[in-house]
Amino acid sequence: MSNSGVSFENTEKAFIAKGNQELKHSLWLFKLMGNPTLVKVFSKLILFAIKIGLPVSLPIKLTIFKQFCGGESIEESKKVVYKLNVSNIGSILDYSVEGKENEIDFCNTKDEILRIIKVAEDNPAIPYTSLKLTGIARLSLLEKLNSKQQLNKEDEIEFQKVKGRLVEICNSASNSTVPIYFDAEESWIQNAIDTLAEEMMEINNKRTAIVLTTLQMYRWDRIEYLKRLIKNARDRNFSIGIKLVRGAYMEKENLRASQFGYKSPIQPSKENTDSDFDKAVDICLENIDIVTLCAGTHNEASTMHLVNKMGELKIPNDHPHVYFSQLYGMSDHITYNLADAGYNVTKYLPYGPVKSVMPYLIRRAEENTGISGQMGRELRLIVEEKNRRQSSKLLSAG
Ligand SMILES: Cc1cc2nc3c(=O)[nH]c(=O)nc-3n(C[C@H](O)[C@H](O)[C@H](O)COP(=O)(O)OP(=O)(O)OC[C@H]3O[C@@H](n4cnc5c(N)ncnc54)[C@H](O)[C@@H]3O)c2cc1C
Image (cartoon, rainbow, N blue to C red; front, side):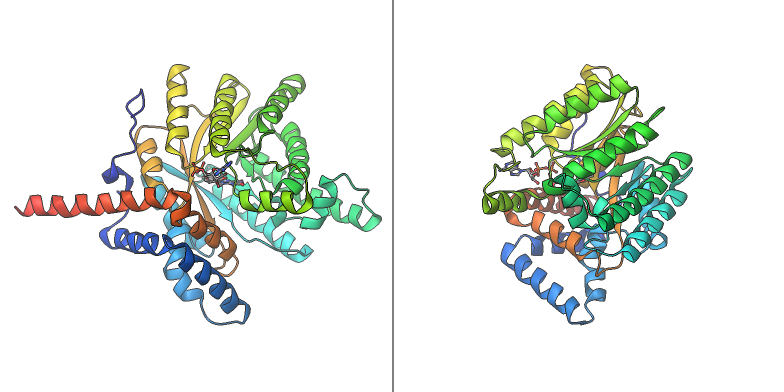
């Protein structure tokens, strides 16, 4: 329990939005995902089935998709948005289409983000939106930019188109006052993302943070980067938005570093990641006048650290510069208990055609296998709530 009385143990509050059937569905799914071999085999089979055109969308939609996604479109996701809003939880609609590589797809993604911004305008149920740069730009172009390679004439034209899309999205976010998070991705394109995010923050964050960037604290260089960002923002007189996460691509990062023989950007241990995450929280809160912070985490200790630090610094629970965020379908015990205590809380709510969100769903399934420790947590809480409901039924019957 935090100094201010927040606890994540209350499963009644955590699962208040889930009926018995839904709770049973989650229990079944998390039990299945607890088996790493099953997850590995299923992931491969499903990707293969999609590739050869087998009709697997419906069974996926009724199972894992339902747990982690809002729907296939904005319209379909609205039901979840309003359900979350009843418990004072905002939604960050995330058009989760990945791996696209051509101009038509990039323009479609840009148009979809513009549609989210329109839906979110004047709608407190959708306080933010988000953007993955690889959704509107070719990966290999970002790699070239990242390594400061000379762009040829065609690359230059392509880059100007990327910038055009980005400026259009940020202008729309600014005009509608719907802040937008730039997600963090792999380190071999992250410098390019950082440069664009900084440029967009300087242009759009004169009064308030419209553009927010993401820092992955599993990288050992991010505390220094955060300090530079803050100094730069103070020197140049603009606000910054920081979403802090631990980072989703650790295995890929370590593997690439060892393959190409460079020093891995990843911290030497989980403890280092945890410690830098909390340090970054402190730095953001100490600069709350110009920093808007979103703690994107399912880690209870880090969440408690932020809650306690806010208390210590006498920052009100609902301060407009502090947000907590979890992924839809995970860590409801954190989300619902924080919302109940009056903190600003949001869920990242991915949506999109079933086939397109498969990479996202596979990442969630892998994250929830027994290996990561996440699974134990989710399953334990669901079982606890099921038992609580059973015994209270017994009690009221008796
Ligand atoms: C709202 C939200 C938005 C997100 N946005 C992004 C994003 O834009 N980009 C992105 O990359 N991820 C993003 N993520 C995912 C996030 O980075 C983590 O993968 C995920 O949240 C698990 O970390 P955790 O803080 O919840 O907690 P934990 O379960 O405590 O931590 C697990 C994480 O710790 C780190 N870790 C584990 N072992 C080690 C080790 N041996 N050494 C060093 N570090 C280790 C890894 O990052 C791992 O994912 C987001 C998550 C949320 C909730």
